[in-house]
Length: 481
Image 1 (cartoon, rainbow, N blue to C red):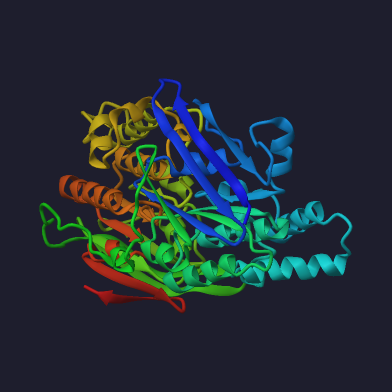
Image 2: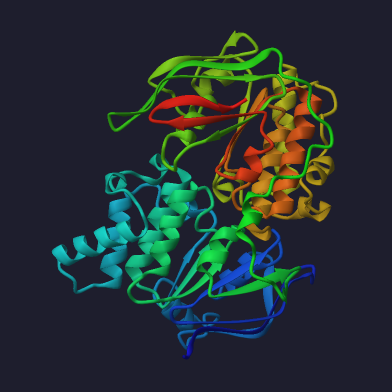
């Protein structure tokens, strides 16, 4: 069977001549699922993007060839033939790829019109409905704009867009990160059961997904292809390493939200819910994808005002609106979003991003901005999450997806919040990077006493939490703790 995609001895370097890909080769034929696995920053996303003839800012291809359906995507004619036609790409940060001003349905109809210009309206409606079904996207979400979707819903909206193109090559970069296990399995069955049987290149840190659905597994380490045994599904549930030092037992209530009601389209995502976080506590929040976890996070961090409810931090009433919090110098609650690319300024280096967050913390601490030394220096923050110090000079597009997620977390820590809410901050990370993030949160909680609410579907993360809360049917219930 002829390969749909062929990569031969591809070498990609940074502007400092650091090799991100070193003579990497890959093939995938129709109906195959080739999984690419490896640590965060090993070159997986760089390889995936190169199949579209794209390298991030500051990178260059110095050697090697790529062919997709016989076309060279690094040429102008080949790029036109490949992108959005012969190949479709689902990035790690899908919300950034959707038009924020248009509804999901409008974007899907446009995709279908481009792919099938002679189709009738009835045919278009059927294809759009089928694509949404294959992507496990609820039709009731079609009229919403991307900002009204959870991270997992945005992921599936972009996946439906890709299906409408009917590409010969489907490149999926962490397609199930941020999804609950049942939805992840449904999504995977959808993309492996497509009627036209595209070649699929699957970038994933989910061992269970790779074990069940991959035809072949390609391991990567520091930009090189390595021999990689098929992973054991048990690895995905392995607990994170034990804490080096256990935080003190929770005492005072640091954050309390009562009677929280959040509505969407007339339906209550939360109905009179109550949530408390104690000093230094790590609380995991889980629940089905699209159930309202991100909406609760947005409310707590001042990004959306709920229909009802009250919020207090350290016993002081805090307004729901971020603008009022700023005016009234209320305690700051930091948010680490699922979409790190959209959250970070593409023109800022990591150092400038962290310095700006530290200055905002200083202004909150002292009206004249005369606060003392920051709790963590930029170098210390990067060390906490096991990022190299040279990342300080890089911009977001010069980082891997997993590295961007860790930078988004360090930015939140640099701002010295009274509480931290992290939304699937570890979903796209390998096990060692997950441990690094959890270790950083432990260190921050020990040093500051600030509580952390961590939205997650990962058993590895849940095992480290002091308490586990489940959001289900509009209510919050304690599962453990």
